[in-house]
Image 1 (cartoon, helix red, strand yellow):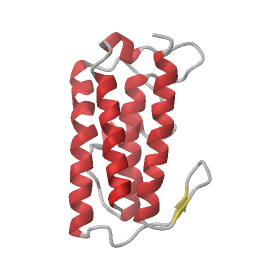
Image 2: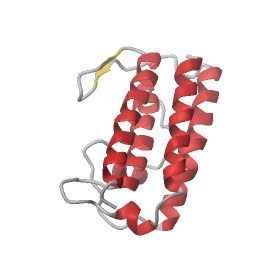
Image 3: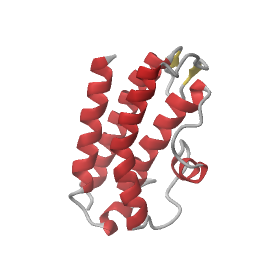
Amino acid sequence: MNATLKSWKTGRNLFLKILEQYSIEDFNKVPEGFSNNIIWNMGHIIAAQQGLIYKSSGHNGYITDEFYNSYKPGSKPKSFTTQEEIDLIKSLLIELVTVTENDFEKGIFTTYNERQTATGFYLANIQDALEFNNFHEGLHMGYIMSIRKFL
């Protein structure tokens, strides 16, 4: 489990570095051929993690329904993301890793609603969910790297 959490922290720090490199206009740009932008991808990994880990374990998680619905799987950017929301995403990227780690240590994840992801991964327990989350966030890092080429 420690390696999974360590990888997750490392990945989230890479997302933070990207947040320091671009303007608000760049974050909101949806290049031709893409259906989303850099900041949507970052909000999406937060929403997806909360769904994979918390909602699938019977917990509410730590983001609002409004945030979740804006970035959940299947959503797309609907409007210009403000600096205030970018700052929220920036703080959640790191804060939620620590909170999730603490919740894991407290043992709150006693049940998990087994399921298959849209990409075909079968998640039987919280360990599977955490490992899949890292895979999922890696995919979205790849999307962000592709989008950056068009800025």
